Each structure stands twice: as C-alpha cells, then as structure tokens.
Image (tube, rainbow, N blue to C red; front, side):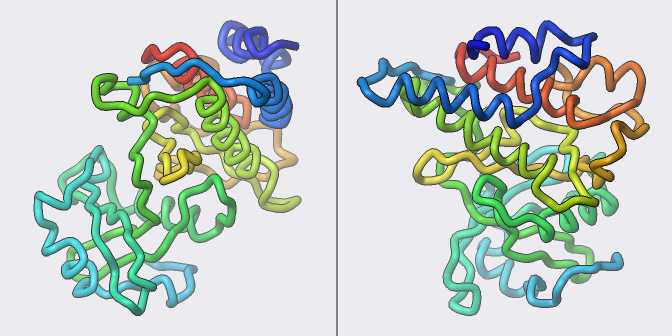
Length: 277
C-alpha cells in the first residue's frame, strides 16, 4: 500500500473503522518512503492543591520558576492556549541549567485543575524520545505550572501558519517529522505495557513540537486517557479540536486508538501538502 493510499484510508475511510491502518502500519509505510528519499537530494518546500502520585523529585519551587522566567515577563512568553500561557526560561544548576518551557495554568481559562493533573500524570509516566520530556511541576500558592523540555523550533503548527517565517524542509525532513510523531503515538497506544495504553484525543499540528534537530516531540496531554489495551473502545464525551477530531468519536462518544489515527492522518495531510486543515 503506497503512502498516498494510506492517507486516503486514514482520512476518506472515515466511517469504516476496519479500513484504518494501525500506527505500526503507518510507521512501516513512512520508513519505505524515507528509504526512497535517502539516496538523492530532495526539493525544499516552505511550510508555513491536588493529590499527586508523582515523585517529589519533580517538584520545582515557585521561586526557581519566577527567577527562570523573570517573574513571567512578557518577553519570555512564547505561546498560549486554553490552558494558559507558556514561558521560556533557564533553570539553575540544581536542574542542570536546562532551558525549559513553563506551562502556567490560567485560572480564568476554560481548562483547569483536572486537565493540569491529567497532563502531569501522563507526562510523568512516559519515557520515549518522541514524547516531550517532563522536567517537573509547581503547585504552590495559586500557581500551577508544568515544566517541560524546551523545543527550540516550536510547534509544527507555527511553521504551517507562518510560511514567511518558517523553515524550508526537504521531503525527507518532513517524512522524518511524520515518522517521529507516528512512533510517539505508537508508543502511547502499545508501548506502556500489557495493561495500560493512552489515547491522546487531541493530536494536531500544534501538539507536535520540533527540537534543534527537527525531531518531533508529542505534547498537549490535557485530554488524554489511560485505557485498557484489551478494551476495544471506551465512552467519553467528545473532545478535541475542530477539523482534527474523529467524526465517529464526535458523533458517538466512543473513542479508541483509531481516533488518534484519524487525527494523525489530518496532520500528515497538512505536513505533506503544506496546507492547513
């Protein structure tokens, strides 16, 4: 099955779950496409106070974060969303002087403590090169902050939406980004052991960060679910982002790994065509 047909099955085969490929099949097809690209040069394209079951070693004092972000200076703000604003800063020697992203909960936003705790639990459970690493968190006073590794090239969505300021990527580089995200999703679906898997539920181009080497790092786990891999699907009220959410899930409330496959198909379409959903 060629990559083009794979995308058609993931996207057009919306209402027929049996036609949707697994993440493992998608990875195999991307590897085949990468093998075809490697021998020759490729043309470039412009693309635009909760209870925690988390080790105390992840706790970062608020004073440390205030110092790193210069008291949440607007100059250090690098983005934001329903959760709140995200800041960039450098931690002290105690945390290896790491450059980090600080995701600060906006208590007036539409996402709150439950989403904060969900993302924190998820990130503290993961260990994969294509998942953004958790550095720590802060829950002190009125502040609730998740601290993660900083991705210097921002989100894939940023490049898609800002073609004039984006990176020119070869076909092989675009496929590499797709491959990394696919491997990250495959890890969520089947790499956490026999009795636990994760459904992301909000896979989109802004949920893929790019590091110095343009390696993909999946992020944004506020809506994610822990599920039993042996349970085909679970009922959970529809959640996600318009244009990316699986129509079957949106209509029925029944979500499974195939819902992430649909959303990832949309991301691949954006990535390979240079057009937004």
